[in-house]
Image (cartoon, rainbow, N blue to C red; front, side, top):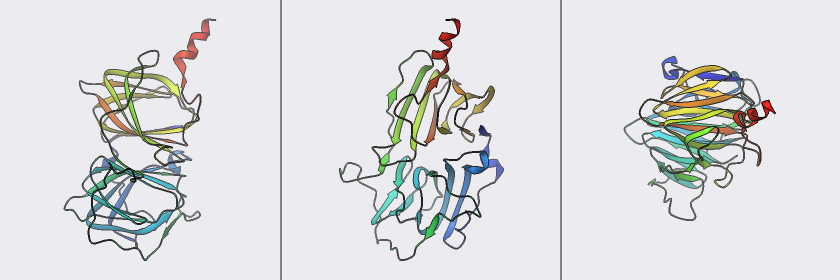
Length: 280
């Protein structure tokens, strides 16, 4: 099971999420992945907060990971008040009180991942708005060099290069939200395919979501081929075969989420390795 979204922003599906109508100002969300596409683990979307906009203090019965795409976003998380900008990322742990606001003059925009998956409309409510939170007079950028800083980061171009061989060529990934970071239900990472790079056909016992940031690629999912470029997105369910090849003259870069977290062994079933046995 899988889904592919082409030029999703042209679909005009930004809306105030259910339950936020009386608890937010200038806030909208575009849902990319939820139960409606067949997912059972993910709630993924793009959020926008207008200048002077805000989201009231609330808690969720899930984990939330955010990655800032543009503008400046202020996050109040428990007792911390933080100012985040492009390529900053933060974790809101399960059941932690938090709020957002935008005191800048540009729209704040961020990628958001929630797991366990939020319940659909009409089911048990898993978001609770709780008053009483206060913002300090001054909100500063977090000191990422402070060893006491937890659940925050800024993306830098680095990461693990997959060794060239059967199934991988020019692939580099950086997982920035995982067990060590504090998540228990999902991974979040950025990936890069160099010019001419590719990864071969494979599948996983988990769900994956791909959100292109720059460059172009072609993804094959269950025998169907789809272009991937900024404005597109793809979700791949458990056991769905998929591969990807870079296109054009610049590297392909993307955000990726995985849920639940990978098992400690045999998380990638690489078809090329197993196909060697067909003639034996």
